[in-house]
Image 1 (cartoon, one colour):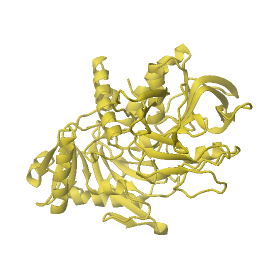
Image 2 (cartoon, one colour):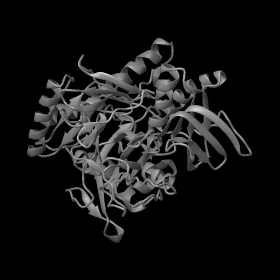
Image 3 (tube, one colour):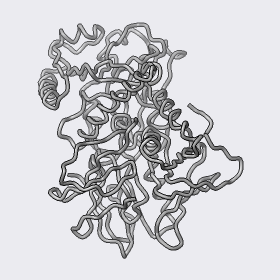
Image 4 (cartoon, helix red, strand yellow):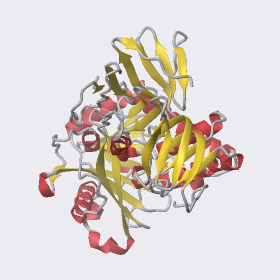
Length: 494
């Protein structure tokens, strides 16, 4: 199991290491697994404490001070659903603070699919993703039970998904994947090239190709879903339990004079005190934010989350052909887990010798827009549109949809939009979820890469031998037989 280690030492460490130098702290190992943090100190378990674009609920033209039980940094899907869990599952008060507005990061730039077709049973993130998959569907049903239309409120569609291959080797791999997904409890079917053509007539995979088909996979509109959750959160503002501080970047932590605990955060405009916890859910900015927040302290904490840039092309009111399912080529799975220096069959060199990975993904949203992707590259925090990458995406899509080759991309200049997102990438491919050792009231939730929507909820059953140790929105249990902590639940939408 890959791990990120915290050790006592003075010099800065490389990007694969998280370090925490405090001479009176024990050596701590921090493993970024699907259940969150597995913490041990000198071989013994550590206990946990018991303890688009709208106007914010609270606005202030001058600096002001506020106090809440919990302060959440980041208004993406992770931050807002964590807030939602506190609001409906406790009597705690919550503040959400962001340098921008909700859905302005990776969440809003994504394709919005909730698919299991490209997931792997028994992987480290399987339980997290599977439970999230189930709870999203329950959430959509709850919306419907309230007399609302999930399609209108969330952009929710049960489209089914297709993971497609074009060679005999890929077809054989897909058959095995269908078997594993079926054994894991999902409805899954292998489609031959002929059967696939009946599902998607415009898709061409050749006579040796085929697809894994999951009819129950869904997609949603991230902007609508976030707006719905945010609206529900705001109902608690009238009770004095919820506030938003947008366009208000965090500039520092407030530390107690009598202890090392964090008491709150200082923003550009406000001072926000926290009685219970500060949660950092700022996506790819979490690492640099944490580094900056601890800059003036005696703690050096390096969370090696990196921004992984992605482009999506949106063709509005596309009428040349229709898609009835979400589609993804097998190469997407390889690119998702590519290391920094790994090259795959669909990678190309771009400027400055950087490697660009492009995989075909295609969806049709509720507005009739064709959404094509996707690219992955490491270019820092730049969100500038790169037309050469748009051309690569278009060319790759044309290899699967021959009709696109007949349509010059220039013809869509007026009806084309480009989404740019920065995915929070972790070197070991697993999210970082858990408290900061030594500062147990500071919790990090980041590193979900392109799977924030599909991993926004996590839960799993626990045995009777496991003991409850503490709760924020994170329910931690200690299993004596496994001698480790396990995260029962990250957040629940309803």
